[in-house]
Amino acid sequence: MTTSSFDEKRCEAISENIKLIREKISASAIKSGRNYEDIKLMAVTKTVPVEYINYSIDNCGIDLIGENKVQEFLSKKDELHLDGVEKHLIGHLQTNKVKKIVPLVDMIQSVDSLHLAEEISKQAVNNNLNMQILLEVNIGNEESKTGFQKSKFFEVMSQISELPMVTVNGIMTIPPICDDEKELRKYFTTMSQYFYDIKEKNYKNFNMEILSMGMSGDYELAIECGANLVRIGSLIYGARIYK
Ligand SMILES: *Cc1c(COP(=O)(O)O)cnc(C)c1O
Image (tube, rainbow, N blue to C red; front, side):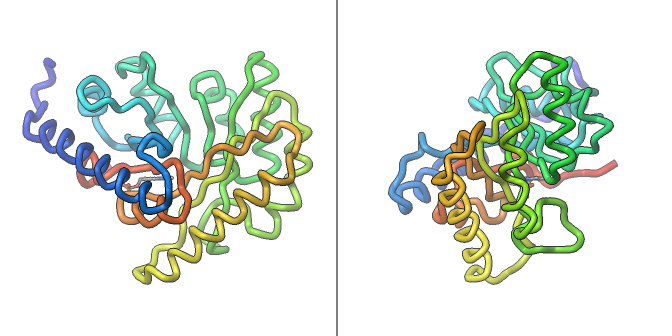
């Protein structure tokens, strides 16, 4: 590493953090009748400098990363050690950026409108690739948040299932910020219910495998409620510094 700001201490912390998170994932998985292997750990890399992302990939077995912004991912990707690493977009995606991102990521987790799904389909067809997506649910029906409102969500499903070169692999959510574990559990459990309801309907081009929920503050609870992909940023890399 040549970067002068590279901090060995921060690397040690990243290793420790990931080790601890894995132990906790394992414990939560067992509580919900599953195993560590059933849960995917995503490292959320927004605002994290490339050298620390690479450290976690090279030394800590991170094989799934999530970025929020198309522009940020584009500026980092050439320096990232992405061999064998799955890349997901997890942030709100504007339709005018779909063309850029579709050829570069393995999954778009933040599909929050029929219009966006249609544009992804169009670009997937243009690139002759199948795009995997998750449908983002605004589980708290919050005005300020992206994601399908619960009512809308079930309306568009059959239309999305008709889109060429798109596979719906599951659903994701960011629940409302709340300190009340009971309330949070309710959101996660509702998501879990949706996941199984949709799965049972056997929509065309749906392959319901992923229930993406749980972040630094609530991933253990999310796993207990059925999550099988958790998206963790600050607990791995430290508090984010926005420039
Ligand atoms: C930032 C972000 C995360 C990770 O948040 P932490 O609290 O730092 O773990 C997960 N999911 C999405 C969609 C995010 O934007």
